[in-house]
Length: 354
Image (cartoon, rainbow, N blue to C red; front, side, top):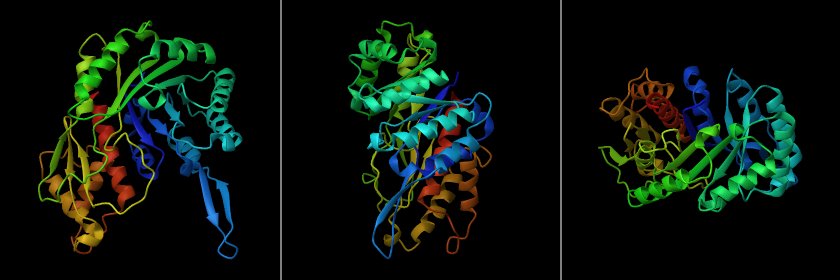
């Protein structure tokens, strides 16, 4: 049984964070990967004709087969962000079957509002491969009030035993003003389910209090800190009669997904046991150091009490190495790599705590 369930989007930054985890960390976590279209589907425009053609990518599949194919591995794949599922169902079926046949212990995630074609495919996989299943409950899937009936209906629909079932209660985005109320409500719902929670494979409580944007933070020489309210919410519940509940979060990102590319600030995001730490910079075009602001941020981090040490994780080592670069001529990487560093540190941190 795993102790930590980080929720990650299948982008290069977050997948790279998983790739560079130490093996002992991989052994004891179960990532929840929200698969998006751009992970599996590529479009290319012919320069001569202007015609756009679509192709499928096996990059994500190769990552799983290479880096998540160890003994006792476990990974939940969630397609709630995937659009036009029906148009790609044959490719997705073949991909999931290849993964199961290659020893990657994928656990499909299903919601009450999943498309019927998706449910049919997952029922087929459960029947043929006896894989475990995750039921995900969230505000976007209809909320939590009817969880009892929804669980019963899904159990009947997929003909699955309780000990092969993971219940994911995803509370989404929370903040200082609502985390107590939301947490109390979730605790009441879980306590009053007509099931012995210990019979399930796992019951997970997840949320995020990391801000959707950094616009509220000024560029400053000093670090900004934010209380990690998802950790407070979880502990308030786990200290009661629900100590079997497992912890999940979104790491150093918001639970509000937006698949957009825009020029953001050069900022460093970091986690401690109780807080998020943000070294807020300016956009590349607005600062004389450009991307090299990240070298300055890294120097401040490693000289602070927040830093876990360069031996703590691969991400921490990279922060240390970048801090040693020349401020004028260094090469601190790019935004995708900075996501890798922050999420790799965060996952390692939460694993060490849990």
